[in-house]
Amino acid sequence: MGLEDLPHNFLTGQLEDLVKWARKSSMWPATFGLACCAIEMMSSGAADFDLARFGMEVFRNSPRQADLMIVAGRVSQKMAPVLRQVYDQMMEPKWVIAMGVCASTGGMFNNYAVVQGVDQIVPVDVYAPGCPPTPETLMHAILTLHEKVRTGEITRRRGVEPAVVFDAAPWVPEVPSAVRVSRPS
Image 1 (cartoon, rainbow, N blue to C red):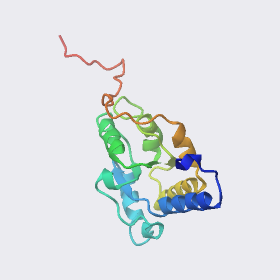
Image 2 (cartoon, rainbow, N blue to C red; image 1 turned 135 degrees about the vertical axis):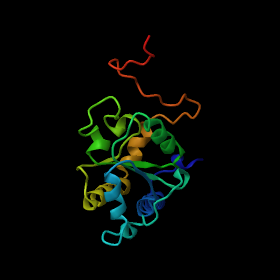
Image 3 (cartoon, one colour; image 1 turned 90 degrees about the vertical axis):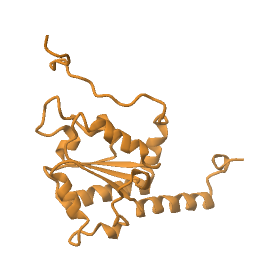
Image 4 (spheres, rainbow, N blue to C red; image 1 turned 90 degrees about the horizontal axis):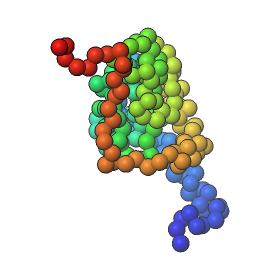
């Protein structure tokens, strides 16, 4: 008899709430600062804004120790496979915040070198708008993510997505048709 076979009662309901609270209160972010938004992300961890009150005082350098990725800035086509690799190495459950208009939509860089939205590479849970967004905006995005985790909205959505296949070929960006790929003759 597995846990899914148990009827939803007082004990399993309270345990589920406890797990959601623990996940929300102990998110460890993996920083992926790529442009000017990274400065604002760093300042949100400083004394003036203090992310430690949300249980996020340590920005992890290893993706295997992180469960929240904050993508701050524009993502180039060359950086996209690295971003996906870091995302795949993070532990489950994992969440992503796209910080800034460049990470969300490509921003003012509407060309072949910049990915037009990080959601083409990894699933994004919360978008933090702005150019660059202020530390308050990032903190609002983090609180929005906390609320989604607390209500269980994210776990329901993640359950319908297919499992990640580790034997799949690495992600390769599409080459636009306007770019000449071969050497000149």
